[in-house]
Amino acid sequence: MLARLVGCLGLGAGDALLEVGPGRGALTRCLHGLVGRYMAVEIDRDLIAGLHSRFPDIELLNADALAFDFNAHCQGRRWRLVGNLPYNIASALLFRLIASAEHIQDMHFMLQKEVAERLAAPPGTKARGRLSVGIQHRFAVEALFDVPPQSFAPPPKVLSTVVRLTPHPAAVQSAAPENLEAVARLAFSSRRKRLGNALKPLRLDWAALGINENLRPADLSVAEFVTIANAVAED
Image (cartoon, helix red, strand yellow):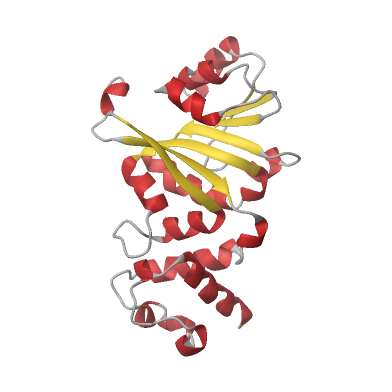
């Protein structure tokens, strides 16, 4: 499984790699020595000494990825991110990384399959939510392969999926992320309501926007959310 992930990355000596949560270094061992610059962020201080000993030439930071300032550390070049993200931090971390898209070449993460499905969920599906909209606005999402429970010890009770996230060109990123996030958050807080009711506090002119206010939030495309976010920003 790890060899397959490394093959999907296609790393080169000129790449800058940032690993999120190396843990005991299982993936680090496979990636170490393949890139020109290697940074790793690990929250568990008890693992730091062992990682330092095994991989003395990587930039190892003892920090919480959810509080880590990616923009401050990753400026000057575009980074390739990799990691096995625990379910309890995956969504929150991905939302943080949206704001760092300009510093990212691509991201390869192993996620619980449920989270991967939310990332890629198209309009009109139950899995679609504000994470789908936020990520799809800034990144192309590609599910690469599933990882069965028996690949881990001890085996979890869920399937995992490895996904690739690649930033869209700047021209495609047509709304401020914070505006889009605010609209999506409001819309999906009442996901069963019609748009006209869910977004009523925004006082939108639906006819001018060209969007059917009787749709549910999960029915909207990213482009339609962008239209709403930009209209709100202009008011």
